Amino acid sequence: MTSAYKIAVKHSKRKTASIYLERDGSLSLLVPENTTEQTINDILKANEYKIHKYRAKRELLNEHATKREPVNGQSFLYLGRNYYLQYSAETKEIAFKGRYFYAPEKSSVTLDGLFKEFYRKRGYKFISPRANKYAEMMGLTIEEISVLELKSRWASCSDIKRKVNFHWKVMMAPASVIDYLIVHELCHFKHKRHNAEFWNEVDKYYPDYQKQVAWLKVYGATLEI
Image (cartoon, rainbow, N blue to C red; front, top):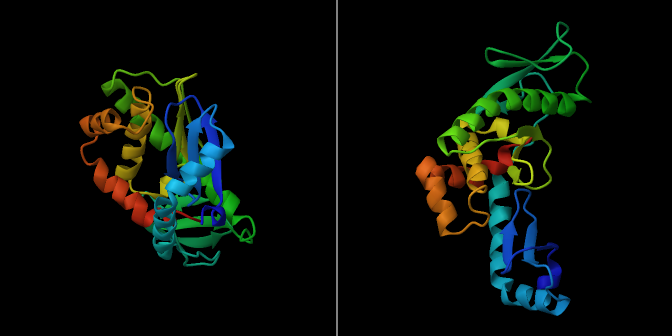
């Protein structure tokens, strides 16, 4: 059964193995550095039911996915609300005003790239002060904040250089979800693994986090251009 699933195996400096459902619906198996191929196969075999459950869950959640067309009147998300696309001769990039996103005329082919740049720029301005505020509350210092394209995570962090990364797509989610993701990543500077201590730390600074986790599980698939 396990051979029917594509699972990325990642070796790292850890003591135990864990299976993760990534943001894009892919599965990752994290194992200690010296784990043999036979042991990996045994782990996958022992977790066949869990793997199947993850896949079924993702397929169900994808029913919420929205296919957006590059036409006037199509809605696009920003901070959890829908705004409407309108082509205009008066702009060379995505402009945001009132209930509308204004895009350059004849830009339907490049619309995805224009929106990505909009979310990236707005994301940095929106997330940076919020991340620094939470970092100060937690007694941490952030050296760098980036909003970019992440392969399979909503956000990530690096302890080598106190850096926190956010996928540009999070700017389509409500502010409360973004705040949760900020706190989540900052807590990893204190607790690397998703253990009880980690979640207690998250709860300390964002007690409403479970609602945001649930929102991402149900509506994460809608955060697409």
